[in-house]
Length: 308
Image 1 (cartoon, helix red, strand yellow):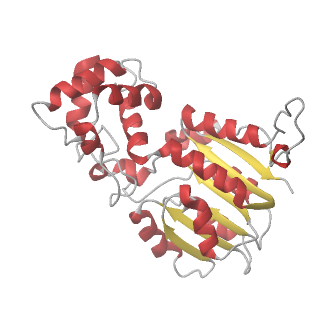
Image 2 (cartoon, helix red, strand yellow; image 1 turned 180 degrees about the vertical axis):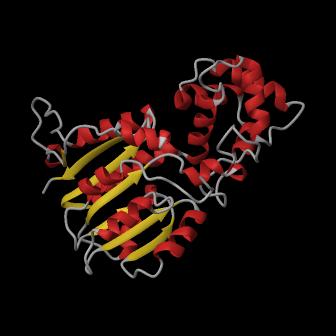
């Protein structure tokens, strides 16, 4: 697989769940390399429209080359955390018919050493989805207190040895700045040893990436904005790749799908009526899809529909 290829996960399942009206307005909040978007556009008629978002400027450039001649598609470089504003800027005030969020890192990002997402090859310790904004992983690791590094590794990576790794990072940076992925990977391997199955840096790289890109906070904001911006009958389809994301999606959907508990002696409040209806159960890739694309193994798709 070259740096510009990406196999969309749960493609048929996602599009089947998402597209309910051929003439509707849809948002792909994580365009990537456009696998889901191309399949989505193929289901639209002449009145259908797609807003394609991505933080990564390279993803948007690639999208314009592939779908730029289709006047049904509008491209925006930006975060789905700002989904509400992007939809309003798009000129859709009555709500959209569907929103897709395919979370995590795309294959082109992961396979390009210059992006710094992977410990498998040496590259700059960057990890930003949008390299033009925010601080890189190297910058964050150079300034963050030991306690903060430990918290991030524990909360976002569920790393049992967070304190040991954080202590090692702070000690190492006193002598040599951590600028390369190979430096960080080697430091963690030296700290924890090398088990047979999973590289010891796996959880730490995940945690630092989530921190640098503000991923969980953006997801929480994006989900709430998505719920507000759906029209009645519109659907929110989310594909997540690790337990922290999936827990957040599951909790948000469930809370929006059930009435709030009415407290004794207080009048009913209109916000206590359900906003969503859950559509089916969580969907996971088939064995054949996992065999063809091992990166699909941890994927979980959840679908919810906006109530009127």
